[in-house]
Length: 291
Ligand code: SAM
Image 1: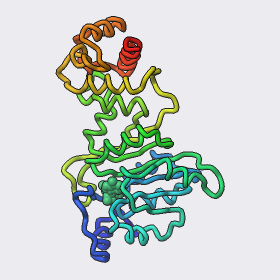
Image 2: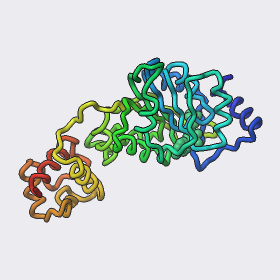
Image 3: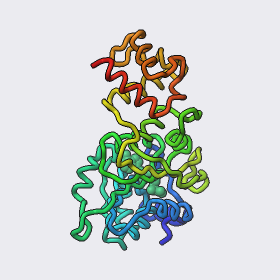
Image 4: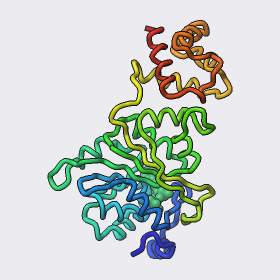
């Protein structure tokens, strides 16, 4: 069965009386070339565990099952569970879990599935075509919780992918760019026009692959202060660094001036011009000042 064919989606809806849920972001992918590209760029091997977020009717899941050692597909919609049982019946290496990914303990899930035919899993790869409104919370949950995964290949609204990829000085650069790039390297996989989904969403998508860094790009004395500086810096984009940092970790305006002077950063600069290295320098200097 060609799961990606729009006629299959129609047949499934008729057979199971399934109704697509707008609130769960159910826009199903119907382009085989894009599916192939996602598989190719996810570098799935037989020793790998794939965790798919939101399998829908299983269009990506079936391809993952053919390539991976084991696939765990986490789907929130209970109405899709019997459908997935049928569409994935040919694969004995897929487990479907009816759960909300935002409430799932990923490390526990990985721990419970950390062997394939008695051998330890080589890599853990997360794949998902996510509902737009939960893309950022899901990605940040995976990164901040330190889930033991190697890569995350995800389809998301183009604008969100642009923000994750953006370098300092670019229009799309913001707190999300710094946070994601602190944890990962960001790789472009594919541009996906809205016409290839059923039903068609309002916006185009992009697939990116986040490779989790084995070593962070900067040395931090305190990660919490780093993220506090980023949040404050980008909190009010119009403000200068000197103004937006006042109050962070209880620093007075005068102390902020001293911190910036000590690391040679002009207080009149705005956060969107600050590189990840500069935010790290700043956070480390704040740490030394308040200790
Ligand atoms: N992977 C399929 C595809 O590419 O055609 C479906 C993608 S559709 C954009 C998003 C899927 O995520 C839907 O199946 C939806 O029910 C599921 N979903 C939405 N919120 C979820 C959550 N919090 N946890 C797990 N799955 C979720």
